[in-house]
Image (cartoon, rainbow, N blue to C red; front, top):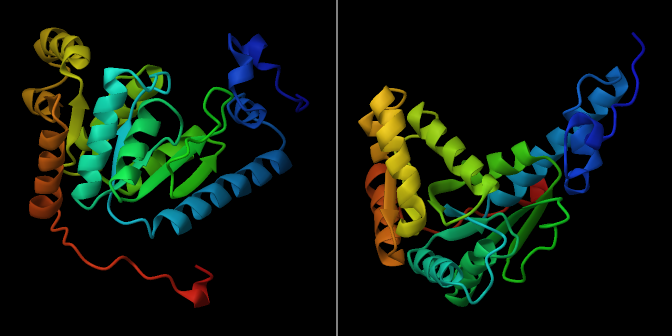
Length: 257
């Protein structure tokens, strides 16, 4: 058969075609010409390379996931801001998706506390404007590249209340921990009222059915305390990973860093 351009996203069942970057729609729409696929691979490699080179120097990170739709007078915004400050006081760089809402709050808390604040953004109409509390900003086209960056440089994950994106990120992190791809990483769910029904559902149905075990469920820490969250992460980073307070990695001019 002849290779043709993929159909428009609305024809593929996407009810919100305006929310997807055209290149990512084409990427997920099946095989295209060999030349197009080759150049796509180069773009993906460049995104990885750019991310690795930039984030190599930001120091030990904690990734904070959460909704972009939370406004600045919401209690979850206040909790995320407080948590960002606690993490900064503990010596961690706070890394988020770089957008508004909970992400902005966590970055803001870290920045106000004198810590480092990183945003790893994605090209989306609802989220492409980065928040103003970032020391380092990276914007990616591909979701999977962005998710690698949010995981690779972190020693722990904090999930504030959120929607599909947040659930996707925490379950991917949980899967990586469960399968041993990353070891002993704290996965903290902040907002006990929000997360308890999900955990109880998992206990009543997944655990009861044997599709997960008690250890899988025990990896989740529920709390409303930013101090407790930071304490859990400090303990894991120092005791389990042997992390020490030291000078940051120095850039090398010979490598163009």
